[in-house]
Image (spheres, rainbow over the protein chains, first blue to last red):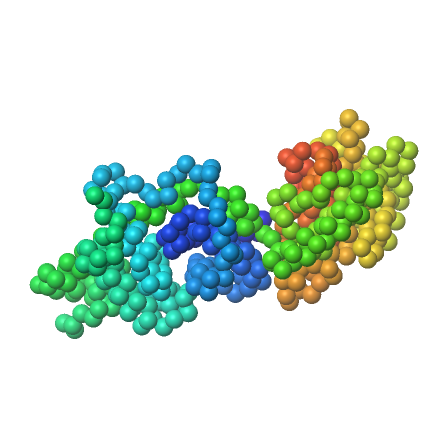
Length: 168
Length: 272
């Protein structure tokens, strides 16, 4: 393997983490990761010119996700997977909070969700987010602001839809 | 102090301010409980998002994702390869092979290398069972073999020495490839099992649409593995040559041989 091959492999866990948060379930997320890697290989002639490999890869994933270029989804479920899809926090109270977070996240518009996630999960600099998503940095900031505020409102129960998941 | 903008509040949460501005905002938040609350809430969001999704980092990678992370041809060539494979199965059947050709771990090399590996496998299947004439020039005349194949291939063709791995050189022959001559070296282990090294110089012209700026030269060395029934084939492209090693040996043994061949070819040493 060349160093580039190894480098691509080394990004896979983080691409999967982001995709899981973005897509909301394991199968769709791995479809997205798979498509992203295939696209990256198809464009591998460009690697030498890529300075920020992470931004480049997340940019590819962004394009695939928003353009809906993903393959038609098959109705498959992982059967060999005994890992819970949602990480369970140790205490009951936190567990409910975490489940709420997932539900709230799914209600964010995708353009806000992407930025909230890239900043939270990847600790990506705003300028890098702007470059990866191909938007001005001002747009990054306003979407981040709106996304976080909306997420907060949803988590605080100030927006009714999230409470559909209320446990009796 | 300048007023705090909304963007700065987020940059404060994310640690993307200069240290000086960070301290300023930190101090001023003590006087602004509402904004301090928002900051705390955004920090909680980040922490909870990490708690929710960080476990994904530790999951074992699914096979399909692993496969996709390995070198492979773009999707458009893969469709061609699938079509090619069907054509080759009929061809292979005519040579006495049976079963579907499949590239086990990497479903597709570039089109040309996949066809190349297939030809190597067929050549192995045809000549390795030969008891009386497995080679055209035997190892006792290695000098002649080298001179002859080098002349016909237009490049030095020195067979790697694999005694250290239990394979003795039996000799070699010249074969027709897709466009020109191909060299086949035959080896044999103590149990009489044969291994062939198939060398083609037509790869540089045929493959690697991505090798821009390096006309006709494939700069990638990616080992690929394919299997047909009991026969395993390891193949790779180095410079303008394609190499394929075929044997009914297991994959680990073949990997070892391939590494040694590659080492000798690239360093010029004979090792064994």
